[in-house]
Image (cartoon, rainbow over all chains, first blue to last red; front, side):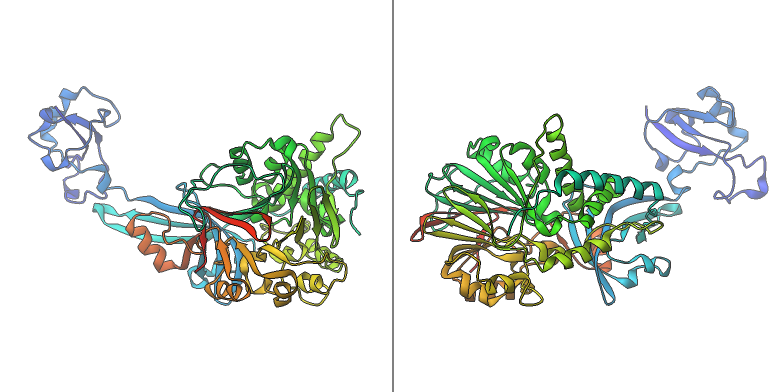
Length: 194
Length: 370
């Protein structure tokens, strides 16, 4: 026997809100065996076999779902209620060169094992807020994602955001000086050539 | 890397060591960058720059010499880092670590206060954000670790133009850097020094090509010119212009040339081809896909200098990364251009005992330029 992943809405508690599922709080959600509630759950809502059952704040035995006849449960799958974003591809990019209204960058995929790529991108793709960061050595993230809106509408979107790298601190610069002295004393006294 | 074919023959490339009196120049790339492996005679080798084979994840020079059953720990006598760009240094620390008998050779233009400061800063503040410089930092840390408990520190050999860096069955000369680039190097490195409160950026500067170490190999009657990324030069005292104007450079004409800076127009010096290279020399080069080099017009220009030109891989691979169609559509909408920067990699191998007895073999994605 399969199960149903569902939410229940108590219309009897507030009959005036019937039909406004997107705003009505659910009184229960979980998965129930189809045989237990086949009279009230549309077959189209059959989902996976996740049997975590929760009803209101107090878990109740599965058999009690049948006793909700007076409540007249309304069912809706979770996916159609909560919008979500699925990342399809994301790169970390480094600006190599800025020329006129475009810039070249090297890209490393953060979502796959794809080899390093080089891209030429238009400055028009960069928000005004980030334009000052489009400089040689600037680091950015380019994301292509699918956004699933309520009731399953799918919208593709591309976002380029520049990373604001931290500034050098006094401590770091001091450590760098110390390390440089170490390298220099070890290696710089050995010039060769004519 | 899979062996594909042998130039002018249907036989596969053989993993047999060259004869003691045979010059070999093997060029690999692009593993982003390039690597040259040279047999300098009597079973001794020199490795110039380093890149990673995307298939194995190893420095390609080590994979290749292992395939020839060369004892890398004793047979490699010099590891040359022509300049610090990451397309020439990836895996160099590992190469040096394994090449226990090798001397590290670097451009003397780097032996400056500013360079040490930049290397130290890269190690402390950038980590992976400065792959080229960070690799140099890792190399120097390796040398320091080797020196621990020993009175002798294996310092790099800092070379300038007209320095001999190896003598054996063959002689290897540095043709660059010219002494005049020192001030330019200092200026460039100074611009990379961290300043208090300054926002960090990654090191991606391209100017370091002027500091590159170009090499001249004399092997019996044979001559090889390894052009690194050295550019033509802004005046008569820098770049290739300085070399062709030099009265101290070794005489002769190269039988094989590793074309400088991936065949780019800014590395083209007609006098280099006329005064240092035989008109029937073999020209070898690697693509640099970040800058889409070499371009078709670069290849046409090089073929006007010499007839036989070999690329380790196509400059623009026909196939990019496999992605869902909806992602591809969006990429085309946003990016003016998107191309792979690495792979497929190829290998061009030149072997000769005399100028008239040479063979060029190709493996992987390598091809002869038609």
